[in-house]
Image 1: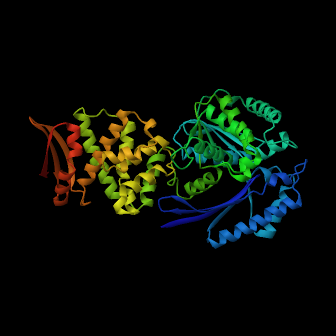
Image 2 (image 1 turned 180 degrees about the horizontal axis):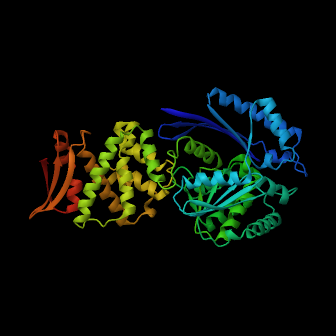
Image 3 (image 1 turned 90 degrees about the horizontal axis):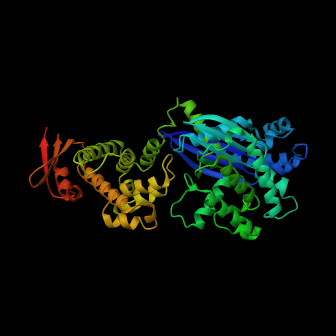
Length: 512
C-alpha cells in the first residue's frame, strides 16, 4: 500500500537533482525517479557572492522542468531545498522571489547546521557504527559532524567544496597540477586543524554525496569487487591514496572514460579525494566508509518519522528493520518467516546445550536474518529460488549490515546444499576461514530443516528437544494439529541435523 509519494529537489552548488520516493506501509523508500543536471550554480557567483541573472535563469529553467516531472508522477509532497550556492548568495532573497514568481516553487533555504543535521540523520539511521565522523562535500561547502552513541554532538560547515577548491587552486592550471594539489592540501589541513574536536578522534569516517560515491565506485572497479552498491563499502588510507594517485596520473579525456567516475566530476574528483585523505589523517580514523544515504534521504526520513510518530526509522534497530523491509518487498509471508526463526532458535539452543555450538550473539543475529529471508528469491522464480535469493541479498544495500555480513546472510538464506555454498563463495573465499565456512554451512542446514518442519505453514511444531541415547540422539518434535507434511519433509532433511550430531538420529513426533 502506497503511503507517500515524495519529490525532493536538491539545489546544490554543483548539481541540481530531483529524486522521487514512493513509501509503502513498511516505510520502504523506493526511488522511482532520479534525475540531475550539472548546473554548477556556484560559477555564477561573482567575487561579491552575487548570483548573476544568467545563473538565476538556469535555476528557473531546471526547476520548471523538474516540477513538470513531479507533476507527472503525481507527487503529493514536493520538497525543494537549496544549499550553499543560494545560501551564500548576497541576492538570495531576489533569487527566491524570482523562483516563486516564475515556477510557483517555494524554495527552502537550508542553514548550515540543518544541512549538516540531515546528512548526519541519514547516517545515524542507516549505518551500524554507534560513533563516528560524517563528511558531506558539495560544490560550495563541506559539512562535517561528530556523533557518539548515535547522538549528534558537534557540527561544522566549511565554506569550501569541490567547485570552490577548483576555483581557488586550479584556475588556469591543469586538473592534476602537483603544486596546486599541494597548496590545496595545505589549505584543507589548516582548515581541519582549526576545529579542535576533529583531532585524533580515532572513529570511523562516513562519507556521503556524489564525489564520495564516485571514488568508491572507481575503487571497486579497480579491485574487481564482486558486490554491487557502495553503501557500507570500506576503504583505508592506502586505498584513498591509490585512487588520488590514479586520478592524478590520468588526463581529463582518460578520466572521462574511467569506469565508475561520472563524466561531470572529472575536474572535481581530485579536490574531493584530497579532502578525504586529509580528514582521514586529522581524525586518525580506523576506516573510511561510504553511505549511499545523505542529505536527501535524511530530509525524507525525518519528515516520515515526524509524521508517523518515529515509527518509520530507528537508530538502534536498523538491521532488523532493513531485513523486514527486504522480505516484504519480495512478498515473504511474515508469519511463516517468524515461525521459521522460532524453530531455528529452538534447534540452535538445543545444539548449544549439547555443546555442538558455543553461544555467539553475532552469529545468532546472522542466523535470525538468514532464516527470516530464507528463499525469498522464490518470488522471482521458484525453480531457481536459491540462486535468486543469494543474488538479491548479496547485491542489496542493507542498512546497518556490513558487506561481509550481507554475504553471510545471503549464504544462509539461499542454503540448498554444500556444493552450492562453495559455488556462491567463489570470489569471497578470502573473506572467510575454513571454520567460518563450515559453520555457515551447518547453520544453513539448520534453517533448511526448520523450514521443512513448518512445511504446511500452520505452525504445528510447538517445541523441540534433543535427547542423547545409547545409539545416537532423539529429536523430539512436540506438535499440535496435522503433521503429515512435516513428517515427510523432516525425514527428507534429517541429514542436516544428523551431520551435526555425528550419529544416528531418531525423529520423534509427540502430540501435545
